[in-house]
Amino acid sequence: MGHRCIARKRVAQNPAVKIKRVLARPDPPKVREFADDVRDGKFVLPIGRRMPLCDAAEAHVLGEKGGIGKILLLVPDSQH
Image (tube, rainbow, N blue to C red; front, side, top):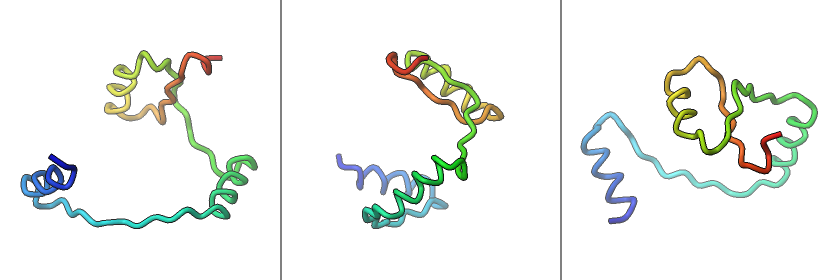
């Protein structure tokens, strides 16, 4: 069963859901602009908590509760 079949079934179960196709193309100048904004502090993603990847289930529960900000899952090499 492909993803299109699954999507059709879910839409049938939830008629308020609308599915639209989106076409995206690489835009290197936009990526560079975004990277520059991150570097220059113009774009900040508030990280509420950093947790090891092995605690992903707990992070998911915390995220569903809300009010914590973004949760960053760390792989073993990055847990400094």
